Amino acid sequence: MDAYDRNTPYNQLPPLPPATALYQDKDVMDKLTLASRRLAELKGLASTLPNQSIFVNTIALREAKASSAIENIFTTDDELYRSLSYQEDDYLEGPAKEILHYREALWKGYQDIVADNSMTLETMIDVYRKVKNTHDGIRPYQAEIVIKKRGWGSLVADTVYTPPRWKGVVEKKLADLIEFLNDDVWFPIDPLLKMAMAHYQFEAIHPFRDGNGRTGRILCILYLKQKQLLDLPILYLSAYILQNKDEYYYKLNGVTGTLLWKPWILYMLEAVSQTAEYTTDKILRIKALMEKTHKIMLDNKLQVSRMDIPKLFEQPYIRPKNLLSDKIKSINTAKKYLTEFESLGMLSKQKVGKEFIWFNTELMNILSD
Image 1 (cartoon, rainbow, N blue to C red):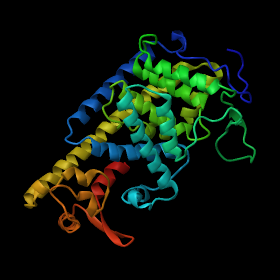
Image 2: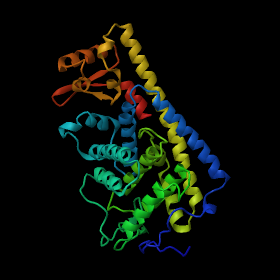
Image 3: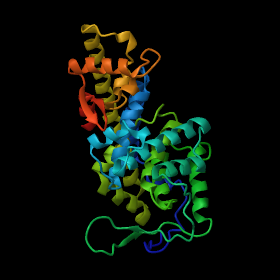
Image 4: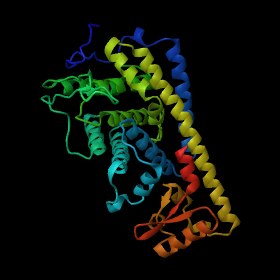
């Protein structure tokens, strides 16, 4: 390719897929086999759970926290989960609010994918709007968006990339990307390889004013759902990217600068492989904790039939109203159960604002590892 000028809009961004020789070799195929196997194991394990949604809430929130941290939006686990328990009361502020917007975006995108069974421009925009809590859409062609070098130093940061820009350019490139993702006849490529390629392309197009990184990582998870590699969006992909953030940006830039597709695809396959294994471990530990909780309830003759145990695992902080159901209809009854759990050392109580909430310490420990 011609030398790329990082100060000029990259309107000549090549369409997908790249030439096979740039990525398809034994190293990639071996890594693809391992990532596919681990992802299948995760999907199978999750399907055995009595209520998969509890893991969507807990693991998706960890994904939200890690993905936001990649963008330098930080919050403590305690602040995040405490805020989560009050999200319907407009209690949120600062980084916790940003992170919970990410989780809302993940759920909105998931609902869109379930409804359409395809990736659409509307889904991309829906996810972005939830991430940024905005009514904005595709950036206008007049907006002179550039990507600056990260880190501290000179007050005038160097430009490392200028995304495509001009009337209709971004829209055309997004349409091509969506066709690549949805058309498996014209583009018969393994979904994990497609995901890796498409994630680079989305970030290179940089279709929104801000929030492209978080939006792009959500779209990766949604695409795995679209292709039935996951039933629910429970892959904690950003954990790996956060721990290897410099490599992530270096290999993204490598595709742009010199079409180094293989290192980028190997990186993304490793991210899938490791985070599938990581998420599987989380699920096994949370499942074991649920079984332990059930046994303690039986041993101490608590009224197991009235308690929906998964309610104790939807988030580490539990408000009495979270336990309300057809079997537990009053706040006072819910408080009674929570107090019984507290007396057995299963929960601890803290005062937040004007009320008490209960804290599932063991669940928090699992999520925070």
